[in-house]
Figure (tube, helix red, strand yellow):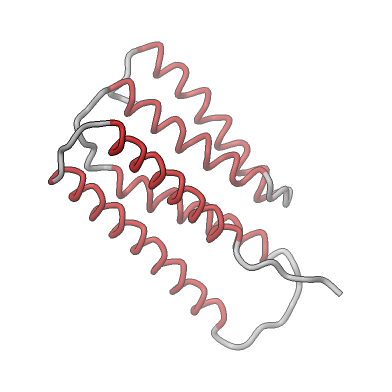
Amino acid sequence: MTRGGDAFQSFGVRIGAVAFVALVAGIVLGWTPLIPVSVAAAGGLYGVELAIADAPLDTAAPGVAAGLLLCTELAYWSGEERTRWLGDAGDGLRRAAVVALLGAGAFFVTAVLLALVDAVRTRGLAVDLLGAIAAVTVLATVLVVARGPRRQEN
């Protein structure tokens, strides 16, 4: 938010506070539908900042993508820890390893895409559509991964 003007920073602080409160409420109160709202608000704020700054490429994007994915994954995990069930020994460590790998994978994929975009500088409607489709696919994938497998209760 430091790249934006005073008006954007004022707006950004408010949106960031709403995202933080939604995340805390989602975790503490167990209202899991607030978790994606929080992450979408934070990610949207970052996207608006990039649009306003009109920077050619932001090298912080892989870190932001990995951070948002980890935030979502850990928030859902903490919600799942509210239920009482006995798992196998080492389940927590395996889950932590999977979450860490997801974060590293998100960072790597985003960094590769950023490098690819930097290498291929073409313009046109087809490239814009392809980029929009790729962005929607990435967001949909993040949401599906963040939600995890659905469990049926008996």
